[in-house]
Length: 453
Ligand code: ACM
Ligand code: ZN
Image (tube, rainbow, N blue to C red; front, top):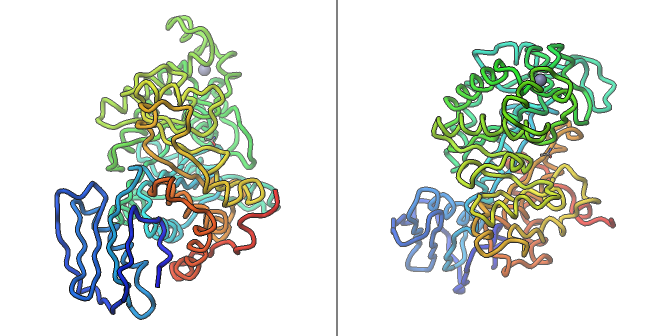
């Protein structure tokens, strides 16, 4: 009679008995005392009531009801009180290394929304392809969206690529909004910019563009931080991104920026001197501060991978995504009031295979580690899991890598860690197989989830 709910609610009491419950038999009640995104659900013989204070809470209550219903629309008598632990329960899709269709993206979003995820971080440009239509810079899609060959070990030498039109992106934003998911676009600068530099060679230090990349590495396709024309370009692209995406946040990347070009560029060296900067790291800090200020002046909040914290920005000026932070800068930032999102390679990088990151390891991720003070813990916005697609060529492969591990991440984002029980979670996750299959998502076979390391 118990139902395999994911994420596990804050409290659930099975009252004994069950009933058939058609959708039109439910009373929806607004009650301002229910927390944001939370809901209360009561099903007995006498009543079926969903109580909430926000539309998101109502939506999450409906998702829970959906999971409570069996194939005959029978729901057990329950009393559920529920609200999320974190306000940020995200997933990131890399559409650069391999691109997905609009329908595939929607299928993935639909699946994530069933488990109460609420942020879609969209990695839209990188060295192997630019994927976002920008009117002012049409060559980004005419040239930067295409590479010579499929790359990444494929012997298919056909031109590979594509991009999302603004109309397609609006369609996806609307699809997300109906599911209470915020879309956070990523414009990854100044590194990972080979596709932009190929399209507009003046953007790099040498002025000689180079290829749209076909392999996995950190490349020197880096925007020149000395030339003013680089900032004109970034601001121009950002203005269109700000117009297109209604959410509060813009991700500006900032990860893995090699400094070799900058060290040998007269424009960059002139900038260093004029600004009194000591080296390339400091120049990236300068770059980040300017881009962050531009975004802030437009009423949005910038986010960056943890490298952006080198810029020494104030807690109010940027949010950091912690992915690989050897120096502990995210902890330091959170402990002095900065907001962070937990997205570490060790537990939630869903492109790592199940041998390296078994489901059990993902499930034990703690977004509020003891390295944070009590104040620092409060500044953890939540958790996010990326699917990088260097080695994820097809949608089925993407689903294999993400399900069930994204279900674990969804539960980490929603449910208090004291309630987590891995053995019991595995059974609940396996019970999602048919639900996901109906949506169009093929989950990895159970025996693949926890292989020998
Ligand atoms: C990253 O994985 N380069 C953020
Ligand atoms: Zn330069």
